[in-house]
Length: 240
Image (tube, rainbow, N blue to C red; front, side):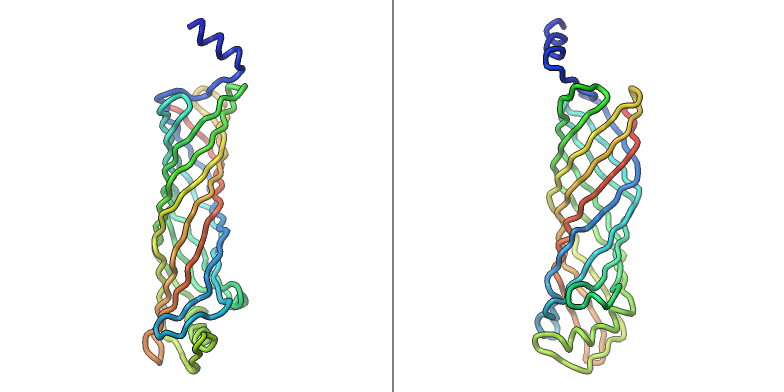
């Protein structure tokens, strides 16, 4: 015991959490995509790329939840969850003025291994983390604007076709698996209650596919989208 106390006093570093602690956090969470996409490609019929025609993805705020279990005094495993995010998908690049093309919902479960840094203040506990994310896209919807734009895309493709008119469209986004990086801190108000702030960078890549029924038959178009969002979380915490 004497050795432990002497070491902690000498180093000036203390730890706010201990092995076996379970820390629950809840609060608003913002997903801010830093997206980029390939040019839209008309695959069927094979008309090729529409040069510079891209898509963008909007921000969204939901209720975020995390649970961390401390494997040691300094290493924890965290699970991030949230209520479903809803993002608008809009035209970008050469077709930026077209407007909203659709929307999608997603769930972003993320598992991280965290390292809690010794710090000379027992109430303040910074940490870093790295992990893996699985993003599930669902409830993709399209707008009339997208339906009206199919003919324009066909006419601007590498092998242009004019006179195409769409009557309906469907949007599908592939699920994504990618790495995540994290930094954050806990601040203890009491032995049990505290506040937290955290940020993640998450690698999210997806292929968006639009299927349109037209007067010329079924037309499909795709684009590869790197969403790669920054995620910001402010929360209240409780430690068991």
